[in-house]
Image (tube, rainbow over all chains, first blue to last red; front, top):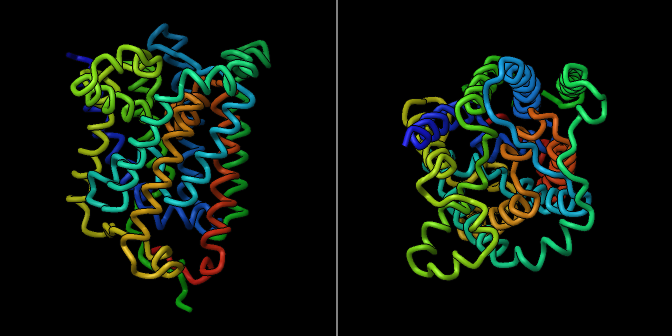
Length: 175
Length: 180
C-alpha cells in the first residue's frame, strides 16, 4: 500500500514538473525536434546527468534499487526507430501522454488510446517477436561500468558527455 | 515575421527544472526503483483484461511480467495525469490546446486528422517502448541514469528518428513558428 502512495506522489510531482517546463506541449516538442528550441532536450540531458550523480550517491550509501535493462542490438534499435517516428509525429512520449491528457489536451487523449492499442498488440505478439527480434542480439545488461571497469569513472564519463551534449545543443539549436 | 525570441516565455527555466526532475528521479530510485511510464499502459490493460478475459492474461508472457493496476507503476501513471491536471489548472500562462499551432499551419484545422495522427503516433511509441522494454523515461532517462548501454543507445536513436520525422512532416512551416 505504501508503494502505491509513493507511486502516486512521485507521479504527481513528475507530471507537475514536465508540464511546467513545457514538455507536455506538442508544439514545444515539435520545435525542439526541429532544432528551434533547445530547452526541452537540454532539460532532459541535464536531468539525466544530475540523476546519475544522485543515484551514485544513493548506491554508495547502500540505498535504492537498480535494474538496468538489457541491450538487444536489433530490438532496441528497431524499437527506437519506431518510437522516434511516433514521437516526431505527435510530440508526445508515453509519460507526457498521461500528463498532457490530465492537463486536458484532447490530442493527447487520442495518443493515450493509441498507446493502449499499441501496447495491447505488442503484448499479443510478445511470444512471436521477442525470440525473433530481441533474443538473438541480446548482449545482456551491459553498463558503462563494464566498459570503464570502475563505476565512479563511468559516472564521470557520463556526466562529461551529457554536459558536452547539453552545451552543444545550446550552440546548435536556434533559440 | 515577429521577433520570436522576444516573446514572453511562460515556462520554467530548464536548469532549475532539471534539478527538480532529477530530485524526483533520485527519490524514486530510493523509494521504489527505476522509474517507468510505458509499463503503466500495460498495467492498465492487464487490469482491463483480468476483468474481461482472465485466462488470456494468465497465458501471456507480457502481462505476467508487469503487475496490474494495484501497483507502483499504475499509481505513477495515474499520478502523472493528476500532476498534469493540477499543473494545468494552476497555470494561467501555459496554453492548453487540443492541437499544436505548428500542426494547424501544416495540416489545417481538421481535428479528425490530428486525432488520427496522435492515435497512430501513440500506437507507435507504445509498440516501440514495449519491444525495447521502456520509453523515454523507463529506458532512456532511467537507463542512462543507471549507466545502461541500452538507455544510451535507445536515447541516441529516438532523438535522431524524431528529429528526422519532425523535419519531414513540419519542415516546410518550421521557420514561421513562434514559441507559442
